[in-house]
Image 1 (cartoon, rainbow, N blue to C red):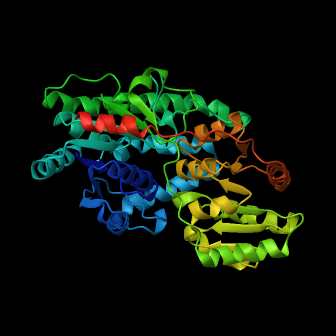
Image 2 (cartoon, rainbow, N blue to C red):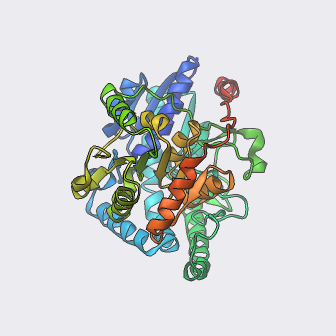
Image 3 (cartoon, one colour):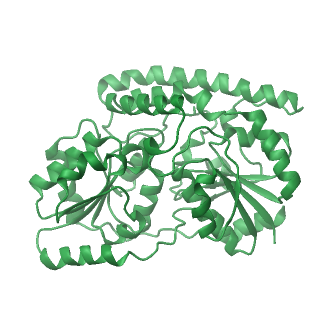
Length: 432
């Protein structure tokens, strides 16, 4: 048995898959500690995993980003992010890139000190850190601690040798307007500038600790193992095959609550013809785009009146409450993983968790990506025949209805979801 520490950013979308990994490793007989902000203590301990406080980042997202406790600067960053999403994909990526130096490299020296003390007290055999926790990666390298890198979302978040962090290598077909395609040059230039500055920040610390400088800080990962929280579509990172595991959809889905089952059964009993059940969820961040949610709700209510539509409204619940009815169910939170098996279609933002949950049950996706790796995930949905992609800012009601009709008229072909190589993961843990 090994004593393993899993370090997660203080974000619900990151804690969730890393907690699934923690439970999977625990099942192999190891002692697993999960290190993150105390906002997640109850959820972690209820999963049977030992919690240790380790909050190294100012931003916290406990389920609804705008409702979580933030500083003034973090709230301003959220406001500017949501404004950028209304301008378009490239404007959003440019906004994210401008904030990247500060957002992704928070307090590296404090993180080194914190990790040094923690290791002295706990004497962990092995660590797993989230790829986007760059300060933790620096700390682990400087303290010469063995670790695995966990890559959330699309594998391209870890750029390939000639790639740039924040510049999507894959886009859905016909997604960008001509004006946005022109702006891609500006995005590439900005990402290259971020790459240069970010790498120099890394190397400043590396030199202090006597480590060899790196040519690309965004490629600084474990020498042992890279864990991709994604299916293996065999379209990226061929050079990492020997030291990587694609985890796919790890979550064991709990049974749906009886109250929800009753609502769905009631709908099924009343609507046997020309009907479908749709789940609409834009995740912990993008539920703030109430304009897009409202457009979808109004269109479905008008054009597809027999549809049961379940909406995860998040912080937009009060603005959307007027649409609640026996066929349109709007809740702040919904048991999304448990509901998906009962749905005919999932409309989501191509976020990593939503995509994996939909993929695991072989349900069709209607994806509307807004930011970061969502464009690459949406491209996979399109290229792998898993659904349709629409631009959230420009889609028309007709396009929405035609997409829903197409996706609900034919079931996706049966596919091999994939099996996690738990034995390989356990061998790595036992080796160190």
